[in-house]
Length: 466
Image (cartoon, rainbow, N blue to C red; front, side, top):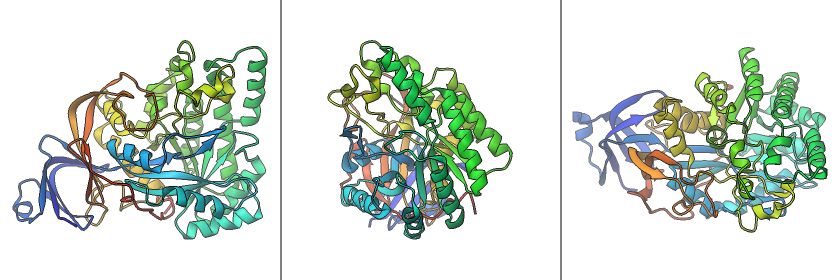
């Protein structure tokens, strides 16, 4: 391994901003020192990266991705090779993807299948959550075994009856198990049983366009499910992490629980902060590009989500990156919005969009790093090796140009999908150079990484609970 000195930048972590030089040795951060100090000048490095006028930030941690995920008769269009390469381009150096237990199968079979998909293909480091599709005595016991080997979070669904759905009894049992073994339950909180009734009624009335996807998946049904998940977690004595929170009413449920001191956490995603039902209503079939669940909401929900991020009622921004090409995949739902594969591309855009939020005054620079790097690392047992820049931590470091201007577009992105959810959006700020464990994977806007550099990272339990 070479020794690298990063000199002259503004080092930003969730805790502080300081003009500092960073020394990297053997894939780790070896030292930080005031820029130009005698100590820093004494470093003997094999190479020097000039970060003058730039930010030096931790590599992003995207704790919610779906690479190579079978869904709705097709599969997400990014696999572990293309998806992690796009992550690197966007300044994300660690992803946590979801391994899926198929009904009637063991958790181990699902986890082994995802290990096989990812092994030797990733450009950046990766870890796994486990989706519980079949809660029974056997799978509950397996949770303990998975935690012992670093898969410490388990996702359940109140939505998608017949596919991923778990009823309240199954959810309670899984939460009780997590209360005993230290696992973190992640919840897709939408009342899927009620939503299916509304879907059936909409289609019967001839309301088949993509915009009706948003209309049937009502904000009140997200809020109701969020409330129910919180109460079940209270009964079980377990922590709860609600994924892809999109609605004002759901934020209110989380805020109320947190005000009571409950170990309840919330995540939102860039699509809910920057897109809205206006996109779902785009003419023709264009709205299909924006079909995801939870759905995009009317624009007025955005201010509440931003406030939740500022007040820490929402702790994490992940992407829920689950891309499907418009041509041949999203088109499966022409004439029936319920058949449009649910998911948006975004793994490459998250860090830039959140920097734009700094420029726009929604959040501070330190909060940007908190919600995109530090909090997801702590939430999912990756700290202190990931999510910050500290001696002994992994040298996952991004040199970020806060003044560069770019236009987001499918013509220039690196995700394996034929459209951009943010086509034509102008943003200020761009990743310039990315180090993953000290190895350069993006250098001066050129990809220098390789499939197989990324390692599987076993995780500790949630570090907000210790």
